[in-house]
Amino acid sequence: MKLRRTTGLVASALAATVVLGACSGAVDTGTGSAAPAGDGSSAGASGEIPRPAACDAEEPFIAVALPNLTNPYYVAMKSGFEEAAAANGMTVEVQIADDDDATQLSQVQTMLQKDPCALALNAVKSEPGAAIVKAANDAGIPVFTVNVGIDPDALTAQSATIVQYLAADNYTGGVQGAKMVLADLGEDAELKIGFVTEPDETPTVIRDQGFEDTISANPNAEVVASVDGNVKPDDSLKATTEMLSGNPDINVIWASTGPAAYGALQALEPGSDVKVYGFCAAETTLTEQYPGCVAQEPYVYGTKVVEEIRAWLDGGTPEAELLEPLKEFVSGETPGPGEVG
Image (cartoon, rainbow, N blue to C red; front, side, top):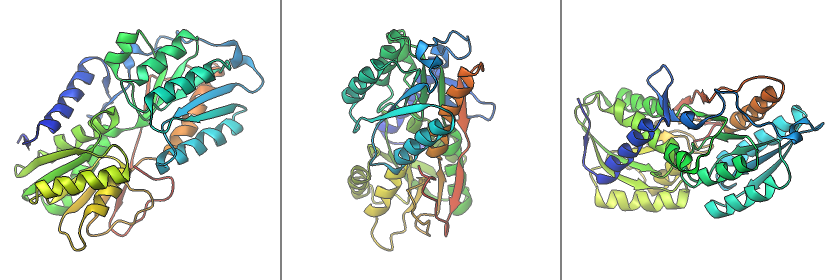
């Protein structure tokens, strides 16, 4: 049965997902999952990848652009890039944008002047990231994107292309979370669900889609509110508090990022009957109140991007999209430092 929705924000987020899919931004992975990859604007499948002269240096230089280091996710990813580069005979420069799109564009433009072999980009936001890809394209530098997909419409508008998109299998992550809820609470339980999400990033939209598609198997499941946690614990705490105040009947929270899960948990009163499921909060033990989460491995993602660039330099053809599986954790377990949402 189709899941009932009562908020315009949820409907808008789902509409955005449909638009992304219609614009060749989502591809079928063969498991019912989809993630934005910019595959319609990817150079990976065609082999038309620019190879800067800098790639023939003894230690090729890779430019890396990340959103922040306040989220443990990016701390782990940064380590992955740096350690994999050293192991693969490369050097990296990692720039941190402090969650500012304009700052990230400026940082990348500066790194492009240093003649990198490639750009590894985890954009702050999906749509503004297209301008960064275009800047690299204009400089003849191939772009490998990670985690945050670049909006396909924005890529088309910029006439920009990427080589590869590597990330968690976000749709399946949402599916896994919903299955945990159904298994724990019952396939016909009365569920009043609130989302703490980020509607401006393609991974979270895709996660929410996977969750909604799966939780709809319960005819008594209803999404009653959706708020923007901005992928920050404090913002998520505030947004969750306001959401619960306006919707006291909520009994399940779906948090589609680790910071959202952490903030949502902080917003709950001791002894609250509300259950939080989502992408894992960093090193936070799961409890009866926080019964299930799925975890990414950003250290691995940083490592694999470097390895993909190394394989390309050695003559390989990068796949346009690589989706990584997510680990599951349940009550009593604690995700490790590199297992985060």
